[in-house]
Length: 176
Image (cartoon, rainbow, N blue to C red):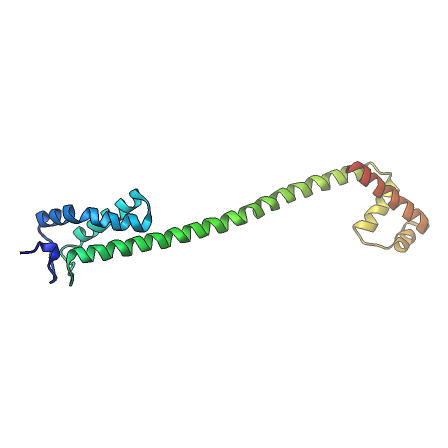
C-alpha cells in the first residue's frame, strides 16, 4: 500500500502522524525545488515551512484531487514565483526611488544655493549708493527700460547706463 501522500484520491489530513511522516519524507525535496528557484537558503526554508503550515492549518477543509506530494510541489513552485514577483517589484520600486533621490537631493541643494546667492546679491546691492540701487531695482525687478527709468528719476539715459554698469560690476566682482 502506498503512503497517504502518494494516493491520488481526495485526502483528509486529520492524522498528525501521517502529516509528520509526509513532512519528513518531502521537506528536502520541496526545499531543493524552492532553493533552485529563489537561490536563498533561508527564503527557501521559509517558503517550504509556510506551505506545510498552510496545508496543516487547512487540513480539515483541504480537498486535493492529486497526490499530496504533487500538490505540495505545485504549491512550493507557486509560492516561489510569487516571492520572485514581489522581489522584482520591490527592486524596481527601489531603483525608481534611488533614481529620483539624487534629483530630490539636487533640488534641495539648488534651493539652498539659490537662497545663499540671493542673500549675497542683496548684501552687495545694499552697499550700492541709493540712486544706483534704485536704478538697478527698476531695471531688474520692475523690468523698466532705460528711457522709462530716466523719465521716472529725472536723470539721463546715460546716467541710467552708468548706474547699471556700476551695479553689475560690483555684483560680478563681489560674487567671485
